[in-house]
Length: 350
Image (tube, rainbow, N blue to C red; front, side, top):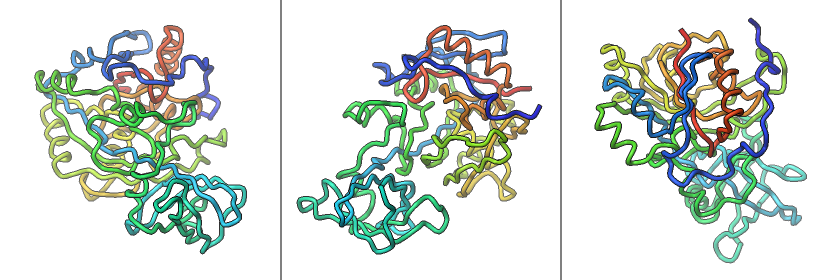
């Protein structure tokens, strides 16, 4: 079947979009999706019961950065800056700019809240040669230092409140290590130390990958013909230790369970590499129904936006009809949706 964009649409009440996290990370709900006719409502802590000691959970250890800055042009016009990627030097970054008129190369922008009573400046170097919608910026000091001082957490557009102190902690996994994401790998937000202890006690194995989530994860698909959609690029890496654990898991008949779609995209793009699983690379893997999964056997994921690339991914993984039934059940039983919402456990189709 040739799926189109409209096939991945659904109606969702605004009141089901979670605006805040649950009080305890692991106390969210979990929809255990076994087939289109077999859906089980659980608490997330019960996920331990779904694993065997031979299974391997793979987490994305990327850390969300306070990627949003505000500045003023020499004319006084306000500029909203969203840092997409740091580099190629520590003082430089590629960024999206929201401004009435785009700045030209050499324009100096004065950062709000900067050092020396607002005198800190950043220079626009021009368009990013690799991304037409971004600009290259040069700061007077390392970008991460600037973000740590005056950056704001870039909460998703469907969360309507300004970032709070609670968001700084809760819109971040407890195992985040490597700064670089502008959005959290949200399936991992359900895990806490108590749950890790329960998994360890059962003998479930763990491994990590890194994929720095870009704002393209929220970019809409604009053409009803999915073949015309160009997926955004994201940097990812997989260590030799993780590769070893994956191969050992497969050899002993265990399942590789991706914690979140970013882990899945890293693992599946690794499976396409002729150099082996381990390494660092850019992925723009776009997974739609009909995709042949090579690495991942099960997936833990939150509920995704209508007509998003992630809806297409989970439909490819668990089956289109199964996902439609699961989402209809979740809406009818009032699961909480999106980043701060509840989760699903999916088995690979076939």
